[in-house]
Structures are given as structure tokens and as C-alpha cells.
Length: 149
Image (cartoon, rainbow, N blue to C red; front, side):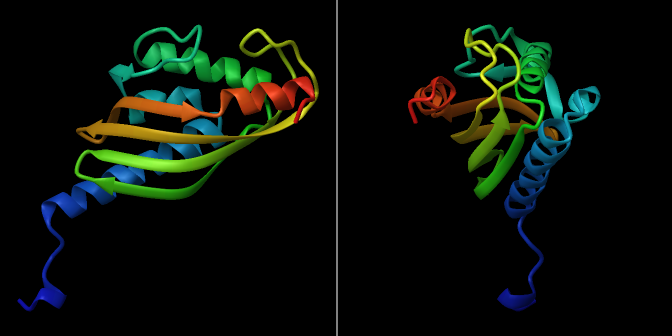
């Protein structure tokens, strides 16, 4: 085979499969608010490297935190702007938007809309997200919720 017609390497295929799983998590679990399917995409022993206040351990902790987010921002939409993958890791730059309808992280419902930047670094094993680290502009979100932005 010439280089132009060679089959993709296993590493490339793994990276693409993991990007597809990450997109499925975003589209189905977050944007579709389908927490019933979280076990299909997230490992039971999932680890959030820097969990937000109140998030418990494992997949159940993530499910409970997302349920809280969906109640607080019922119109939450997560948009990926860039996504790259290598091996078992996927990194993405995203924004999420939503209208604040219930208490979230100690801030009572304001009715204000927010746009929040986030960077996620996820690791996959056997097709499931097993680890995540999120860097989110929490200060910017708080300013928007309090009307300072």
C-alpha cells in the first residue's frame, strides 16, 4: 500500500473513536439531558480531577451534578468550538449557555442568561469516559449571574 492508501493506524482509530464518544456525551447526555444513558458513555469509577463544589464521586456524582445543572439551567446548551484527540485523551474548548432558573453553586435563581467558556480534558478506556478535568470560567459566570458583566 502507498502511504496515501494505508489504513489508519490503531492510535488514530482510537483517537477518533474517543472523539466520537466525547461528542456523544456532549450531544446526548448534556444537550439532550439524557441522564438515563450516562452508563453507556461514562465508566462507573469515573474520576473528576477537580470536581465542582457538591459533586460526589464516580459516575453517580457526575450524574447528580449534571441533574443540578439541568434544573438550574433548563435550556443549557454546550457548544464545542475545537476538539483534538491523541490516544486515549480528548481535549475540547467549548462554551455553554443557559438561563439561570434555580439555585446553582449557592447563587439563587436570577433569570439571567450566561455564556461560560470551558476547557475539558477527558480520558477514555474501553470506549467510556473514565477521567475528566474541566477548567471553567466560574468567575465570569458569577459576574454574569450577579449582573456585573
